[in-house]
Length: 532
View 1 (cartoon, rainbow, N blue to C red):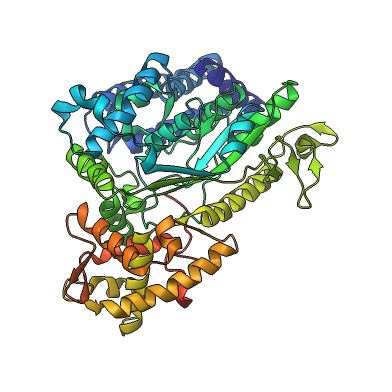
View 2: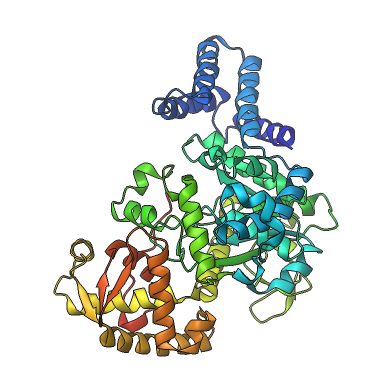
């Protein structure tokens, strides 16, 4: 697959240079050298960094005296290096091992077994199935998989997402999906091996070279053309604030149009590509503390890649997973209604539908002067339509959980009683001495639940079973126990008849999952922003 990507990329670059619609080859290479020099100046002394420095030093030395043919060869070497780094590998043996042993191993950890006892106790461990709730358009997804290629587009809260989705796909009887994973995750000792062998391809977000980014998109396009179902996180990175994504990256989303166009031009029988939204709802998030701290410091623009969070610490994994199991908590995976690459609805038979529900031929969206062709401006508008539809689906398919509703009611009641209007000064003032009478919080929670039930009745959000029941004492009990079992400091603590702030930043984080719905008369506190 990498060779196909390299061939296409080099051919495209040379055609652009020759026609004058793109940069000359020498400029493309110099731009790569510039961006890679900036990256490598901060990359340390790892073996990979040393190898990259040696490679680009050779390119820099040769370029000034290179003939036209040699420049083209240097371009080929750079693109090939990028493509080989990106390329994933699927090993059927590794997949068999993962699907056979990963669920019981996770169950064992959830039950509190030590790693040393895992091997001897796997058969005796209860199933994880009851803790993973898969709902929504599951049957539609299964049918569409037989009719074309799937692009699953989930929300992104945790680095656990890809593994949880892998188990869910296996549960649904679907094959493994290929997906782009941050390069830093491949060094994780827990998941690195399986990511290398289960079709994950690497995405180095520290690489800013436009040539690298175009190679990455071309790789994703080729995988779709080769009938590889894909998993894209359109938010680009984990939600730092805890809110459902309201702004999506469109680069990889746009590859569905490019792949579909290639399929149609080749007359491929199963040419259709279906984009399927997916919302993952956790009662607790493994990396919540690091993520919200990063968001509040607004350091995401500088750090972007967090390499030292809870995901990298095995002990925190165990604490988190055992906490979920001990409290019988559920992770919700909600499959939304599918779309075609242009943002149109798709029915269960794979037909694209117009706004009135009439069947349409999606290939007509590709026509330029009566022929299938490329129009970058037009295609970007189509991709924008898809992004807007996905954002709406994420909001509708979000599942309100006890931790979210209690955090929301508690946080908003604290804000209402505070004279501080500035959000960040308000958060800095939330210490353990700040508390509210429990009856006041329960009253606010009752009003919030009424709003949520009305919103859910209109299809604007989903409610977990406990939240949907409206049983306030039970909702409060589940939320407070959840808040106290994993995080170093309980998020909210009950002391007598009062609820005290444990970790104000985490109250804000779990509250934000319900941000943007206008609940309790609130305005959006997490403004949509470009990821990265």
